[in-house]
Image (cartoon, rainbow, N blue to C red; front, top):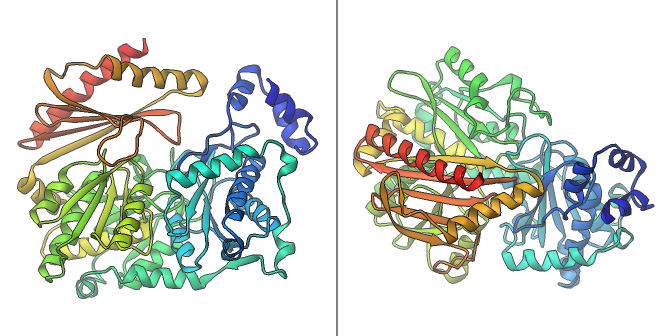
Length: 563
């Protein structure tokens, strides 16, 4: 392949990278070079390795040069405002952060870099506090250890908009030769004032603002000694900020899972560093049983997602889904604000289109509207910005089914530090009432209806996998089923055509007569097609039976397409 040969013969590419490329077979060459790693609406994410369809120093530098060229178009003030940079515990995260900084500095743009790993939401916070023009965080969130990424934020602290992403992509595509990339060692630029290390001052402001979101500090104080918390950062960036926030809130019985406390790019104690995976909590559950803990928290490597385990009525620890945690927080926040007569008339809850409708039903009971966005927390951040600009709504809470939650507006992305603090406050509140969080969830179901959801991801790798994913979406659009699990389909929403004021997106949503919903979309960050199932029933057994029938019936349809 032409690009493969260009890399092998380029004087810009180092010998170690060339040696890596010489030792791969033809199929691997095709996979690494059949396209450039896509710069999407949030940035880049891919497997670490040599090639245009991998993430490496050269791809990082090229993306950074494109971003720098875009910033330079905005004038001298944008250069002085600079770009804030954070990174997590993954392989090469710090190296990639410094490579990006070196490109920005060489282009006359100030680079602020954290002195050690930090959560993604703190990067969002830092962009706003530093009045930076942009920010990046080197992370692949909850992806497997082989991945890393380059996530771009704008001056409002939110991920870049579709229009800005497209303009940056245009600039990246103009960088056709590695020789066009400017680079300067960041350490040599401190005296010029272009390389600035971010230390504890931002941490302190951030934790103080997180504490401002606590609604019932007196209840935390009352249960500071008897509400026991087990926490695992899953070898990521959450360890210090989550524990600092919980301790600042007043919780004294906070225990970390020692085997998963320290940063480890291999994520050696888990199959996947993802709190959505139940097995990630095995060590924490063992510890929680020994401590007779009330709750277990787990955050992903960049600490923007939160998983929670609570005791059921048998005293066994179960893992809550993202939809369940979101519904619990919606109910807790709105009920407490209403009790204090602090519920604004123009209050709003935001969720994504693949998130359960239970939260909407709960919010309606408090007279609060809910609006939907496309999948991805960036769209929730954009709505917060819009509300501020037009003074149209007061943002109360935003969430998505994939373990992402946000309260407050000083961060513009999902935030597991905030969510950890609020979930533990909620747990202490229910303990004061002689209840567990599980009891509260059961009460919600009995009052608002029984909802159950399931996500199934079908992994289809490489060029052939891309084609199969496209085939699934094309077939469902052109020849949709008329029934699923014996129930008539009443509506099919094709978001690629545009629905309401939402941007166009490659998502299909199938709705049946009994209010079951199936949402299908290709993943934007992994070689997967994701299928979200949601059912509503009259009781627990009824809803689980409906969900089982729904998943089995539609899985058979997908299998038939893939034959």
